[in-house]
Image 1 (tube, one colour):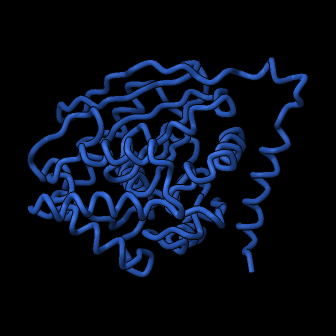
Image 2 (cartoon, helix red, strand yellow):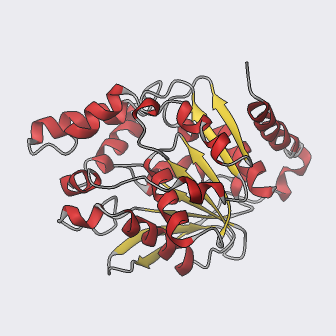
Length: 302
């Protein structure tokens, strides 16, 4: 039986649908946002590749992608429905077009990832931002909240997000393939990249999309996976507990992170609401983009 917070989360979808304009009024809606490149410089001197979409004066939404992914994974969120906001996507260190240190130590400390997100917020002038964190992106946000607090954050949308290393919340597949991504054997590592990506979906994307995803997944150096073997998640709940409001989006068919990972956040932060996607896997923002965008738009306007 659905919990009260899960039922309440359904109201986000209803509210979002209620904001849809009739066809006669569509001309007044904002167009799909146009992007501009932004260069971010981290505290330890790395360059992060970022894009800013929409009006620079609009309320910001910052998207934090998952492990081995890229800012390109948010392309289905660059839509007119979210154009009332400034949308900011960026490649994490070691990913996409951002700098890629060759030493695992550059990825082993949560403080580095936290400071990178702080740099994005500060250098884009994005105080009062909604932070959207997918998978590993939830861990990045958790470290940011612990280190920098909630002063610049209006709310957080955790999407099939890793917020704890408790094994009960992660599948056996997650641990098995995660370790193989750090293998010194190129053949093993290549197989792991392809398998890990396939586990992100309940149904595989079209070949054109999947080919592009494989390309940017393969750009991530082994050093990232070696370094992340030392990262920790202790004490992050204190930061999550102070967030003004949290939307938890989770695919019921996630093969990597169990829905219990999101459900536990209902206890950590009573101002959380959970939205379950029955037919989605690890990537509801891609697999059911229309619903995800409606709910994010409604959440961002609260």
